[in-house]
Length: 324
Length: 120
Ligand SMILES: [Zn+2]
Ligand SMILES: [Zn+2]
Image 1 (cartoon, rainbow over the protein chains, first blue to last red):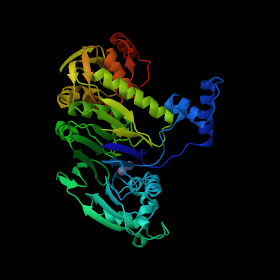
Image 2 (image 1 turned 135 degrees about the horizontal axis):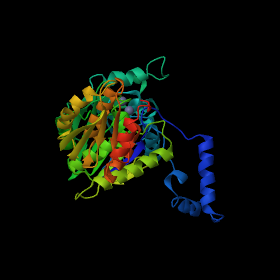
Image 3 (image 1 turned 180 degrees about the horizontal axis):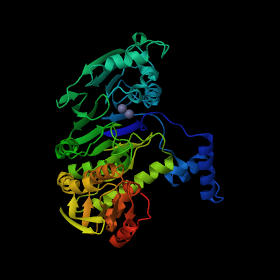
Image 4 (image 1 turned 90 degrees about the horizontal axis):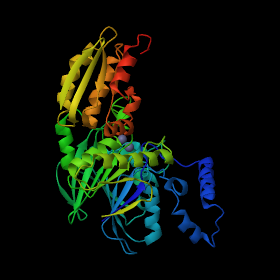
């Protein structure tokens, strides 16, 4: 199984400004120290050796993560996604580039919740406009379909949901139940968030991925902690809402519905998880800030590891791929 | 986790020992509650001596946050002192070093809190 991150930002998409790109280029030129390159490929190979924040960026699309069970070819394929944030748009374009417009594909989309940053990519998801495609949108909110329809209703969007050409079905799931969907064993879990959100535990052939975003941890009840330890238990990959620092999450941003890198490390350590991905980055944070948080989180993991095996820590970025 | 309390002039020094995690944070909260209650503009200042604290989890830090949220608006003062290297890094990474003063030693904390000229 492979996880591919199409959108990793929380709340609102962000883009690098011209000044920020210029700053990165200048940094790269300084680091190159007059070196010359014979072509683009050689320069890109060199760029890959530079610090991530110099040569790359954590990216700016909102939540959308693909789970790939088998690499797709040109033939019709079943795609699996978590959330329909603005990262869904480049995902859809990549699918069209791979298959062309005539191949009937199936898209299974698991929705954490219908907040705008998690549905905003859908009106720009070109495969939804193409007859022959089938979309199965899963979630535990009873008002999920209504939220999708409303964002495409006038005056918010020019194309009504009813004009979408694909065969679209909304499927309601119950938290705590286990389902077999698209080759995965799927268990949703209720999370604390304004209007509720749901995490998903995906299992297949002994591999486990947990998608747990927009989830606040109150830290006032050992039972609540233990329920998440069970949810994360033995996971190969935990995609975790680490939007704020712990101090912010329990004070000025209490009840804002998000969590911290520190709680992510603790829950993953208690659950014996192998890889923690910091996700739903605060839109205010620049690349350097996210890289700093990633480094501090790795340090925290090392400090508190004791005798347990290492927990790998990554800050998600648009384009990140993780093989399980 | 044990909690040792000692009063020095107008400062109560609370010294937790061992580890504070999600399983005993509640007990830690109950143990510090009466001292937090008393920490206001007329009551003693509160200094946590962390020299014997081996580890503190997010649930334990939340108790310190609640203490500060209660005492500071009431005119009290709260600080932590003498964290071990590990606990100091936890305070920094969690950004709790921005929530209350972190003194290198208990004596530095006592001196700062004893100073009547020091503001809140
Ligand atoms: Zn969100
Ligand atoms: Zn949300």
